[in-house]
Structures are given as C-alpha cells and as structure tokens.
Length: 139
Figure 1 (cartoon, helix red, strand yellow):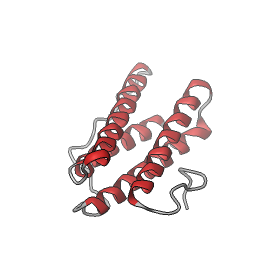
Figure 2 (tube, rainbow, N blue to C red):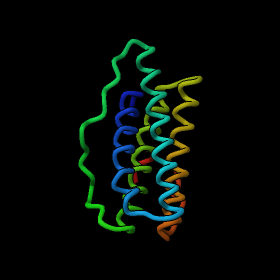
Figure 3 (cartoon, rainbow, N blue to C red):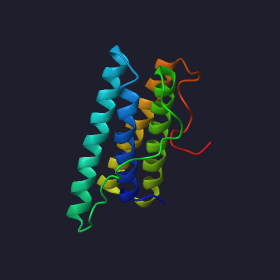
Figure 4 (spheres, rainbow, N blue to C red):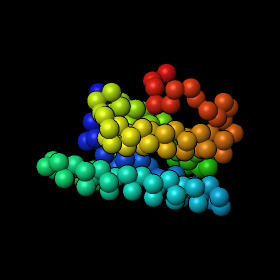
C-alpha cells in the first residue's frame, strides 16, 4: 500500500522528468508539457502542506533522478511523458485502499489526472491503444 509520502516522491520525480521532456518538444506538445509540470507542482505543493500539517516532515526532492532511458528527441520525450504519468497514476492508485473520505477523493483525482495525461501523451505520440484499461494497475 502506498502512502502520501510515496505520492510526494512520485510527484517530485514527475516534475524532474518534465525538464528533459519539455526541451525536446515544440508547439502544442511543449505547452502540454508545461501544463503537466505545473499540475505535478501543484499536487506536490498540496502534499507538502498536507504532510507538514499532519506533523510529518515532507521529504525533499532528490537533486537528480535516473531516467529510464535517454531523452534525445521528440519520440523519446513523448515515451517518457507516457511512462512518468503511468508511474504516477500507479502510485496514486496504490494509495486508494488505505484512504477514505477527502484523502480518497484526493488520491482518486490525482490518479485520474495522471491517467488522462498519459492518454493524451499516447495520442500525441500516435500510440494505440491510447487508453489503457484500469489505469495505474500493473500490467
């Protein structure tokens, strides 16, 4: 079972990943990458406040993260965008069983947002099917 601390780590990693993603994209895709990074920053900030409010010291972002593959062009940037959103959705999905009420709604909304972004990136990349059944569930 994942926790909000795990979700914070996933959000930190997603923010980092959008740096190399964004520099390899142009036009509408670059705009979408900036919007995705902003969404992850917003979730990160909310998680930091939530964890701090609960008396937990939120973990800071690592200075760097290891990307699963080099991002050298538009194709690899789109592939990473899909992967990072899928991974983030999986972490948020894992939060669901241990949550209720507002916390569950937060986790569900975050999972859904990441899954929708992953679908949009698949469509941009021309990946079919663009929609995966049961977002966030391991294959």
